[in-house]
Length: 612
Image (cartoon, rainbow, N blue to C red):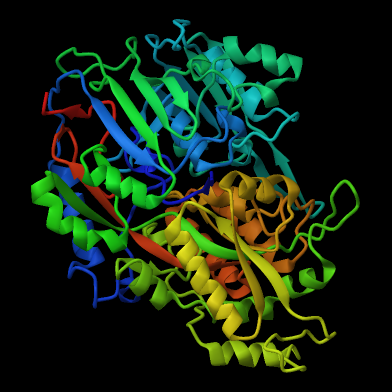
């Protein structure tokens, strides 16, 4: 499931259960290497091999209880209701509190038991039975049971009264060959007894076990708001955070907007180490909320924070300070999350009957040749060298090279070529007829629009400036504006009143995690969301490929299907990708049970301080 991200989310690098940031650097092509002028000489292949070796050699030690992990972030939650959250800031906070039936290993990327102890399935993969732990309690002391699982799926995720963020993952679509129409249906979820739950799927679903990492919610807390029809207002951002009840290893004990979020260990957490010690080891996790990325860096440099997600521009400086300031720098290859330029192609209207997009602009944005021309104005080399200081990778495909063999390195590319962009626009008859520096379309309308991105993220705003410069260079009149992140999310998901934007989305090791982006019926199909049926042939093709790939159990065939989808996406450029940053991290040398791997740094439950 994709989430809108304010930046490369820090939380997704250290949380105990992987949150859609998984790194498989097995198919990075030479052309994806960082600029050699400024980057360290390590190749992605060497980085990947070192990280795999780290995971192979790692074993947990018995740690000591106590202490605090302090982090700094520009991210801030917009909601405490995880099923209604569409931003990674909210989900990053709430995944400290909630757990699923399974989790993904930060060492191996394998699926492991969490709230479920074990499971079995039928030979055809349509019936799954999960056996749940009997020693788990919600934060308020109420026992966790299979009835909570039943409730989560039947009353929350599949509720038609609101758009649950997890629902798209569990909508099973299939083509009715008799009618030629697409149909969709949910799976059946039933508690067989207090600790056994059955799932009946309408068709095979390849990422089923991975998807079972979705959060389970407390029936005894949420059943009332669901029945009263007030769930959409429940656990909103103004809620006392101590009232948010999960099963996870931490609870929220303090939230001061714009300042800090404090998590405290759950004293009744169900997991124990091999010596019988109750986890987690840490007493607290403190997230300090700051305004700018530079503020995060300063808090790490002065010793306040313990972990820092390093920007390319800061890597060389921090390398010189590592020994003095007692921390270690780590490189982990290309990021999984993507950053891109998008144009609003939504032909709909608001409640007042006003179009979301001016029809004149809509005509430009829906023109694939226009989007291809703009793709040729994207100066990715300057982004990598000038902003990421060589520690970045040009992105061409919708699936990052981090996804291993799912990544298609052979998609159509749009190298930076202003002459080519001008040629395409000229061919459309969109020329600067009055010689004022701005092109007019073939109907005489000046090609002018506003480009937005969120404030507080200098890297993204600098990249957006380069994008604006490229479009301006070929005669497009582009006004660049910074907006509050909450406003940007609202424009994307509610009001749809935007023209062009640069934003980021999370990803996952299985491309199906992008279903909410790529299926035309979904709410995060952001250039034209919630289509009743695909309006273009290429969107229909992508719908079909993603659906077929999700039900295909043969891995090689799934790779073929997702690679075909990537080729179609690249040809039609609904999103114009920028670059993938190198995953860089700095960790204070005061922790046990940590090592950098392809998939994370640690399991937060086992992390402990060595300086107590």
